[in-house]
Image (tube, rainbow, N blue to C red; front, side, top):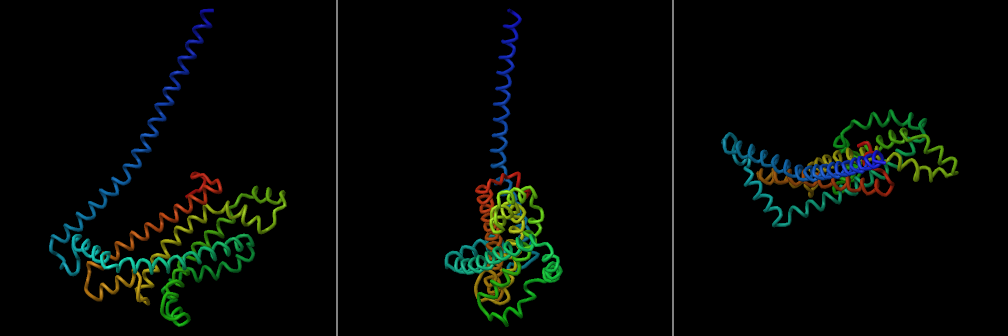
Length: 292
């Protein structure tokens, strides 16, 4: 009887210790997560301070003329000037409109064609050599023909964005279709799903984690070539803002434009990441299942 009572007490004690250990570990994990959330912005702030310190140090060394290499204060003043007179928002609005039209069109065309070509492998074997020849060609190289075909205005920039974003989306989609688990397709066949339903309900959700990687690559490429296209043949936009500032010998506005281009690109990348998480949440794709 005493032995049974002792065992019961020992079991209760062990259970209590295990519960305390679990709570302690849970608290440590929460603290680590909170510290990670705090550490990231702090590290970002420290990195920016170091960059500004090095930048200011180079300016103070007087090795470069202020008209060629403006100080952080001069650039900050230039940024305030662009914001105050509304110039910045007008150029950002124009660039964003061009980007959204070109990028969204490239996504739709790239995913649809990628799903079809990834499914019909023999057709892709015929198309693949053509894609591999055209893919390395810079979108800017097509600019003379684009101007001849579409004239001067917004359309050439939109076409350049489309070309820059199309190939990463197409290739990632084709590749991801080939990696879809065959078990999903067998289940779809057993349920008698039609071909269109298989694409929409099975292949596309299963391939999306890899397609999302292509979307991120396409976004960076499209944003870079948008600015390049606006520098060559546009009268508005962030790229034109930099060229116009250079022609007026305003290096402070040139650097201000570069900073705004970087911030805009970062915000666009975050927006794509949020869209990816939203789609993954609705389709039940867990973060560790995305593979990116």
